Length: 306
Image (cartoon, rainbow, N blue to C red; front, side):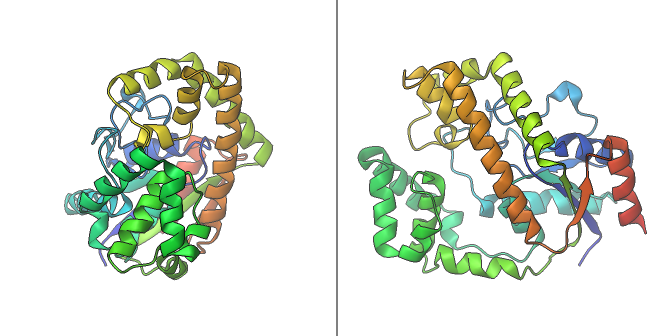
């Protein structure tokens, strides 16, 4: 096990990016984004990607692929560990930041994936299937082959259904692998800090941020993605904020209705994120109701340096 790695995690809109950026700036290091959607170019507003002009430290693993390219926790594991190792070799403490719990775990723990997570032939085959037959038919395919895994995945979470089918092709059950997540075996000496705040305050921040996204051009961003060919099985259509605006552009709802749906689904996502991180007893929780950015950075530094 090598030197320390710090991870700043927590629910959407809690302020992770600002804290991680300030921490990396203080340490002369870099932030490694652990966000499943910020890897995609052109998906900036809807993923709350920190603008370049607001960054005080390098932000790695954002804007690395196109929205129609396949990406997964296995690929993130490979990319994140490469960045961690490079920063540690330079004598720096890497700072991971994100709310995608699976990505954080993939980077820091001994999590092994079937080769289908790297190879994309099977993924392309299943994506063609869903384009031809729809997400319900894809889900039914998984349900016939692995009912236990199907029960743990929403039928319209196409990316996860595809992943579960790929794993079955490699002889690995998605449900069985998830059972092993409860006993992580660390690869690095990791210090994991989760930011939290009172729920009504967090939900207020989520709602306000969605309003800002719409005001700042989320509709136009989605239009540009569609012009580039974001088809029904592609990431843009699966991400919160994008699928609702696509429905609006298709005439299925008004912009106000789409905006309210984004807020509701973002709040639900924040609840799921908190549930994920609460399962990990390695995490130190920081209450952002009583801390500002500098106070959070000070608290993290005290814990890591002691």
